[in-house]
Length: 232
Length: 254
Image 1 (cartoon, chains in turn yellow, purple):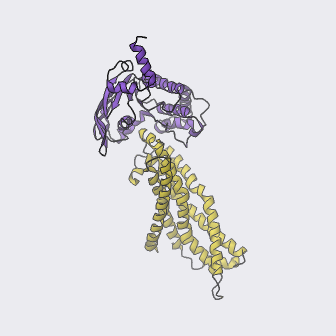
Image 2 (tube, one colour; image 1 turned 45 degrees about the vertical axis):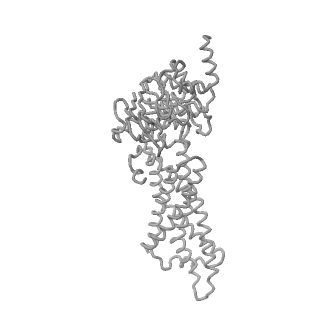
Image 3 (cartoon, helix red, strand yellow; image 1 turned 30 degrees about the horizontal axis):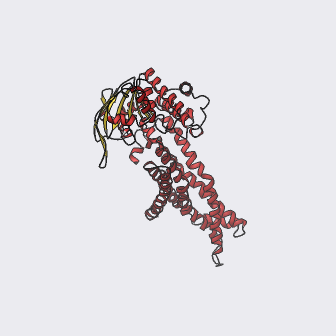
């Protein structure tokens, strides 16, 4: 399928519009819900860390450190990708699946348009912008932790910021973005595959969406383990 | 003209098309009829290249489909229009965008020119003031007419219609049939229509192929179909009470 996606490209100007539409639908459209989740997840990490800091010898700045590490290393790239598998992945599978069962894909084929290029390629390109979303999520997640920690009187703003800056390894951000790119490609292609090759009617579109979500999650989790083993 | 020679297609052990030979003439409405499951849609999908035949040849204006390279096939497809059984309109686009789609993909027309052409053809199929509606907001008959407009907007050389009036009321069905025939004659299109609607067959079936058990069991015209003694055809045609009565009346010389 992947080879076909890049064959017989659609007319440039049409493709450009499709890519912009997909960026809007897949990336910008996901910003609200993912930012909301990130804000509260950051807050919860701050609260949990604070509750577990009984030892007076451990500095309070550890709260900032824990929020930064958990958000940048795992929450933003991995957990948000799993959330995206539910939001974006299901949308991709059901939209392509619906086109399949209503012969819209056949209509494209009859017109001589490569449906895989027309439908999947713009999604693949749009997901190249996924790291921008994740960068915003990282910021919002840490902000959530900051707000909960400082306004909940768990730590001073200064200590929290010291924690964020403490033992900062820029490579870890690169590692998170490499993971994000890989997960983005999984999010664009696996659900497209399940939608494009599904057979049946409306019921099967729903089943394909569920199957696609499960397989996308499994693939992301396994890929996360492999990438962590290789990169860290 | 489209020629089909020795077309075979099976799915597993089940033979669907068992050596079909047929000719579809330019400027005429060529109909393929037959009961459900007789292989009409499989035949059409083989001609369109959506299915690969097990053996046999499909020839478009003297050129073998199987020997065309990617660019030539693309060129051929730009000259094809297809009216799907369930319209297959792109549900993310408005009526106007659906009709303009082939122009957008295959021509260098400016937006205004595309709009003018789309409006002309929409007017032709008696659809005005629906340009900004989504397919889900219009009726089945209107969807069929939009799909027909999309199929012919780029002035195709070949038009394929899969049960163009299934699910439509008799009046709308007649409008669609007449439109297809008019457009076929005007633009000298090779039109292939799949149908099991006898009214359509009588109205516009200039050449008719009757498909049964994967073979062409009979061929003729709409004038000949009532005179044939072919048992398979008479079984099919006179399964309708109305047509049985017409035949009895004809036999009595009424």
